[in-house]
Every structure is written in structure tokens, then in C-alpha cells.
Image (cartoon, rainbow, N blue to C red; front, top):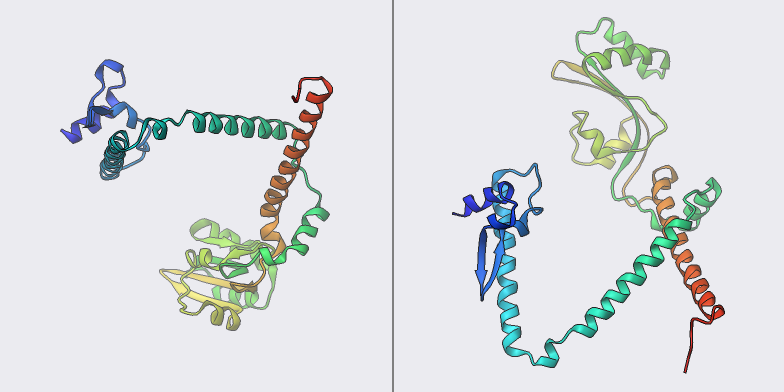
Length: 272
């Protein structure tokens, strides 16, 4: 019966086809109330779990509501004042943010971003090890592979074009030497086995690995360990978001003050 109800959740949306999933103290939970609960890509097992959980929470809430009807006085149950205050708070929040969004400037110059970073470096602590790296994954059967490795190891970037072609055909590569990336993400691409990342990074700069018919040419250019200050390049987007929120908060205050002044100027306000 439960599985049938679950299937009806998608197939029956008309009011007259609503299916009751649970009932408690006269209140009924219909399948239509759960129509947006389950994601389209959810498995049957996940769908059943989500619906069961929702029903359990709904039943628990109905039990408490029934208890409230019994235990609370009329005055205690009257929440109209709190609801009206909550409604007013929501409306004032929404209108101030809407007006602020209409006026907010989303552009920041480089100096402003850099200044915030310099003055708030304690806010940008790394939670993971990061590195600057170049690597190429190429077939082990590549002609003159030892010669290519010798050139790569010596820092000769003239072989990068050849390595890119080899890696693009049947492997993988990363050659943006100026970008910081999380070491954990790199470990998903390269078969490096280490139980101590910091020790590995301190003792390896150029690495050649063989795995599954491929060879990896790896060069670690720079690294920063966890708990160090995150580099400006990685935090730039976060700083923009921080400054935008601050700018919006200041705008909200400005708008609120102006609206108040305009209301007094237009004699819309009277104090008795």
C-alpha cells in the first residue's frame, strides 16, 4: 500500500485523486504534500526513505499539536501577535534587501580586494594542503619516453606541446603552473601513495610514476600546508563576496535612514 502511494505521488496530481498517506487525530497527510520532496534523480530506496522520514516527522508534529490543544490555555494558543510581528519582520527584511540589490555596485578594484586580504589574513587559514603543479599522463609505449622525461625533469618547457598531445589523446594533464589546487584533488588524478602529505611535499619536486600502462611526469612548483595562510589568488572570490555583503548591509542602513527622513519630510509621520 505504501509503495502504491509513493507511485501515485507522481502520477496523480488532480485534487480528486489525492491519496492519504497518514492520519493522526483527524488530520490527514496527502501524497500531494510530498510532491516536491523527492528529487527526480532519486533511487527507489532513497525515495522510500525520504517519504518515510517525512511521514514520521509529520506524525510526531501532530502528536505534539494535539498535546498543545489539551495542555495550553486559549491565551497560550493565541499566536496572532507573534505571527503578525514575524510577517512584518519578513516584509521589512525583503523590501530593504530588494532596494539594496537594485542599488548595489558589484564591482571591486584590485586594490580594495588586496587591502582586505592584507588586513584580515587571519580569516584565511587553509584547511587543506595546496600546491602548484604540472603533470602529464602519457602512454608507457610512447617513443623516446626517457628523452621526454629527461627534458621535462630539467625544466625544458619546449616539450610541453608534445606531452600535451600525448596526454590529450589517451591520458590527462594539468599545466597551469600559476594556479593553486588542493593536493587532495590532485591525488584523485595521480596514483601517489602517501600517509604524510607534508613530508611528501617537502621531499619531492619532480616525480615519474608508472601505473596501468601510463607514465606520469610530475613537477611540484610550490606548496602550502594546512593551517598556513591561504594565498590571495584562492581567496579573491571569497573576498568579493564578503565585501559585497558588507556593501549591501551599509546600503540597507542608508536606505532605511533615507526612507525615514523622506517620511518625516512628507509629513507622513506623526508622533502623539
